[in-house]
Image 1 (cartoon, chains in turn green, blue):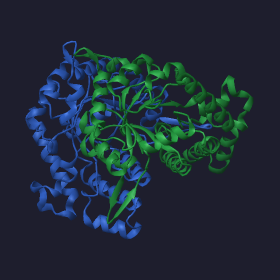
Image 2 (image 1 turned 90 degrees about the horizontal axis):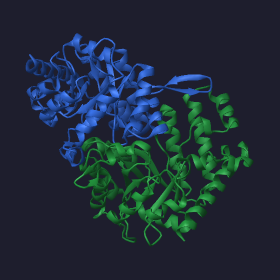
Image 3 (image 1 turned 135 degrees about the horizontal axis):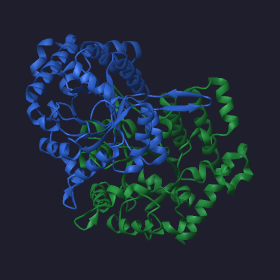
Image 4 (image 1 turned 180 degrees about the vertical axis):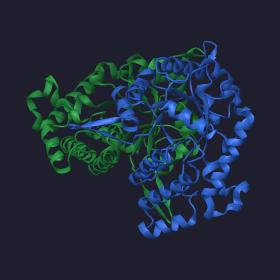
Length: 308
Length: 308
């Protein structure tokens, strides 16, 4: 799946991923109204509204983006109907040829981590049948529990030709509380980064010098990109925090290798709620998806401009 | 909700929690067969099977246990039908008067952590309505992202009178890879423990000297219990790893305060799959729930014996 991700990036000339993190605030009034009329003010209405919202964005952008990253928390908050919208979004994005990164940040031990790996990347045995579950292409994973938490994911990735991105340095202000603490002369995130590189060593693409065990490192800490790039030369880095969280194209060059690959930059609000921002408000609510398309084009130009 | 947890513990004289972590391997053949006949070999059948299995255990044990801890991964692996079984289990356990600890180990930043907090402990606004979602009483939370990841949960807990348990030291063999690394003379888990105590300080029960911001620390590391007890005197500790993972009653005394409170010990497989173990096999598959009841009684006696 790392091969498909790289090929999609090359095809679109856009090392970016659209974060499909819908909240009701982002969904145009007209869609909300329709869904409330059909389902009442219920979780079902909310699930249907965010699915329709997502579909609009996918239809308007799928040919110029390599991947999407639905953040499962934004669906989980609408319960079962929200998770049904998550699943529909995953399936539809894959139908459109996109790579789907499930931003699930799961992490547990042994058999429990196996269950999460199966839920998001694998297949479950039921009686004599074997059934896919949420079936994303990649998942994000939390490293706090160590190798026991990661290995079950890597095993499933190997079997199913999928991939993970392990949290190394997150984009939030308090990420430093634990991640920056110095251990034997280096911050915790560097130790985690080294582990990620080690976990990935035997799990490489056959075609490209990258592993399907990737890392997450926030755009809000560009100086860290350089260090991580050195520690993890063959690790693909998923970089959140572009746009709304403050990162800009020129800050991100450090996350890439000389081959122009090795990183994929996420923007969520900046793309999916573009129509609500000053820069794209001329599109209006009814053309929210076109505003998203324009925001993708601008973001790609910003990143590619900085890289060239 | 910390009050209710403590009252339930006092009432049952059993500081333990039953981990409802079903896999198809644990579900008696007769239940599986029935569900396959009704739903085919599908996710729906699996969801229904684990729900019926759970209901049997809840009916047989609710009067002698204070709480249950469904591990959401075991439900998520069966997709939407699995999560429907999770929700039914949460609702039914609450109906039976039990405290429900959602073992979800979520953790993200800002608005995303808020979304998880709403999903598991809070309410979501939809149009003019406010709706409960999964609605557990407590949730487990991962600390790797720092205060940004925890605060949204604490806010929801305050509003809804619920609680969290933050991972401090997990029970698995490789938990030491990061959690034991020494920072300024103390292992990372102690730093996390201190943060948990600080996060909890302003969020205390009015009746008992305990906070509704709790911690998770594994029974497999009893010597750590003592240190954590000192660092976090007012923190309730959820202790996994009893039984199947190796912990025993006498190892666990350190996790308790002198008032006999301050900890709640989890057992999953040891209780719910008791009928499959040598010790309880005389119950047979059809009496699996009675085997669970006997295993609870034995576990309570083991812990209370060690405490007295």
